[in-house]
Length: 248
Image (cartoon, rainbow, N blue to C red; front, side):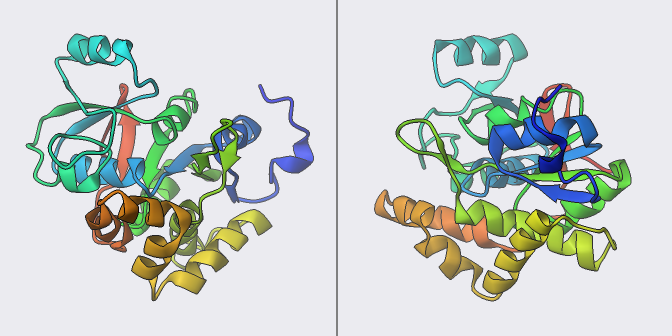
């Protein structure tokens, strides 16, 4: 149970938006369904892999325990660092992953948040599947909390990441305009950021801080996968510890 005062939990609204782990803690007691948004790149990776029929097991630690966890599942462990040569948090590395693959995907942001939602139904959302996830969330529950993951500063404090606000806003846009949900001011603010960038998504993600980091490291191809809007009909839902494409 959260000890955060109720006036921070946006309880008057059907769709809420708050950042990171503390956002989950604040909203969990009054949430029917969570949507975790980590555009660069956990949620984008989950969408690509799950859309291919893989089972994606989020794991929060990049250490020796990860291999033991993968072994216990008969799963492949993704590389700890972004790579084009093995499964990793590079979306490009997961294109064409065989159906049925069990993949353990360590991530300090998206996976950590996923594993903090408790028993609340949880989806992985991004730009690629914004509409699909919005629709699926409305079928699961009335009180929807969209959580942009953000990144971490060197001191391990939250760095709000514009790409995650854009992704969250895309999902919220569908919740407002197609599914008639009432949104908190925080959620409407995310939707407004998305509306500002919707016709220049690649540019917005490429030139923001996180995008510039990827370009500088030679992973500009990942931005193209992350910036594709509504190209996926997959709504990855956490089921028995793994994200799988969910249909109802």
